[in-house]
Length: 87
Image 1 (cartoon, rainbow, N blue to C red):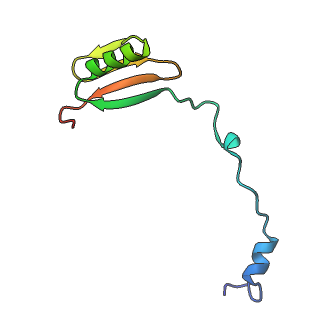
Image 2 (tube, helix red, strand yellow):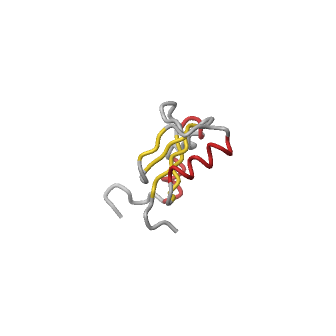
Image 3 (cartoon, rainbow, N blue to C red):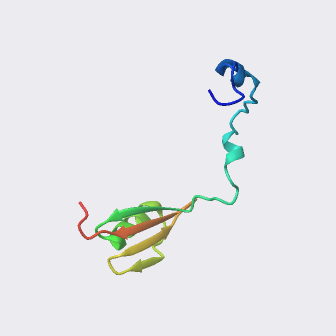
């Protein structure tokens, strides 16, 4: 054993240590962090964004070639990322 620990059992050492309860979920979350979007990988970002906009009554607000499309929705934005070899 290390110097100065002779005779101190593990049970004794633990019982004398202050053991704090872990913080609750609300105490650990920062108010600065917000869920803002979900990104879906797909072969046709503009087409899938248009589909979701039609289904959800939304509007596609950004399309960049075959690479990216965005659609705002209630609570978070839906992002669509083009993947050439998808599927």
